[in-house]
Length: 220
Image 1 (cartoon, rainbow, N blue to C red):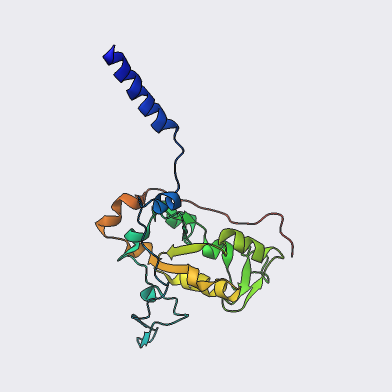
Image 2: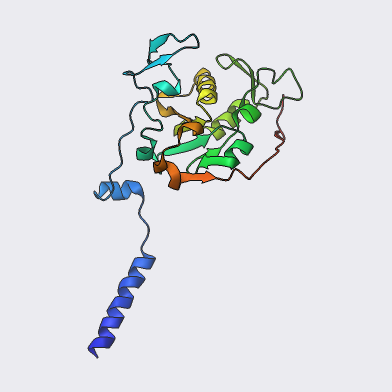
């Protein structure tokens, strides 16, 4: 009889565990179970960067170079998997398919977001043309789509191959009114070679994609 009771109690225990509602990180944090590192400001003003002529400058507000970022290949591992961050890779689908960090979704910058001739060249479907600091909308819906892809109310970690495309995108977002205290340039995939990132990396160099990018139903 005792054996039957024990089996019954154990079955109730496991049934309870399997049907319990999974708690969010916020709920677990409130209960003291989960500790999440506080995010630093996007720009580390203790760093410096070099311009194209090799001159060194202090990192300050508006210094969007990956060299000025507070989150990089040195410490991104501490900030992966957060519920309060969107992780976005802005390379094209071909480069992304070959190798990427699993946490990051792909939104191709040059294919979808910006080309200087977009709007004046019908073969250029990108949302914005002109310059990244003074962008012009290709479509009436360009700004609406930009916010759908990069929500204004979210903290966003951006990466590409070396960090250059992210700089352009950050300047374009700034020009369109984004809160840049929420946008991080975490550098390029080429910098994430440390073995600590191996479990988070998809490496499928055998894949080759040839994509065509366009928008449907937009108006000019």
